[in-house]
Structures are given as C-alpha cells and as structure tokens.
Image (cartoon, rainbow, N blue to C red; front, side):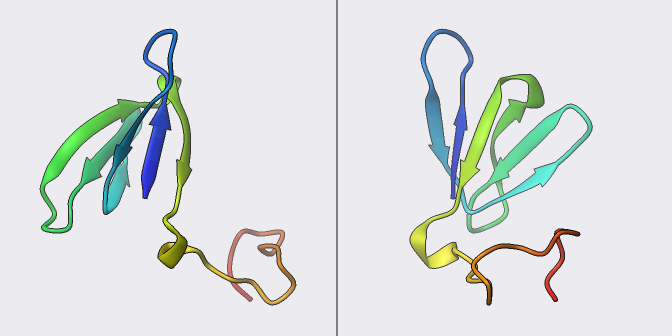
Length: 69
C-alpha cells in the first residue's frame, strides 16, 4: 500500500506492506514486519491500496457499518 502524507508544502508517499495504528499516528511495516516509518495523524492524507490489495464488494460499496456482510 502507499501512504500519502503532507509534512510541509508538498505531499510525500511511502510504500509499505502493512501498518499499525496508534493513538497519535501509524507505524509503517515492511513484508518482514520491520518498522520502516511513522506518520502522525495530523499530517496523514490517505492510504492507497495497491491493485492486488483492493477488496471488491458485491454492490460496489462497503456496508454502512464498515464490516463485510
């Protein structure tokens, strides 16, 4: 997945395999589980899954509760 964030005037991005969310930000991890970065919530823009990580929903949208039906 790609994590997009804006630490200053320009957007930056980091490719990672996984992340763990904590109270003040997210810790990015590689395929072996090693921490490769940290992004505070206040500069986090969005997270984009790679095409093979996309989840297809039956009606094209996730359910209202955010859980799979």
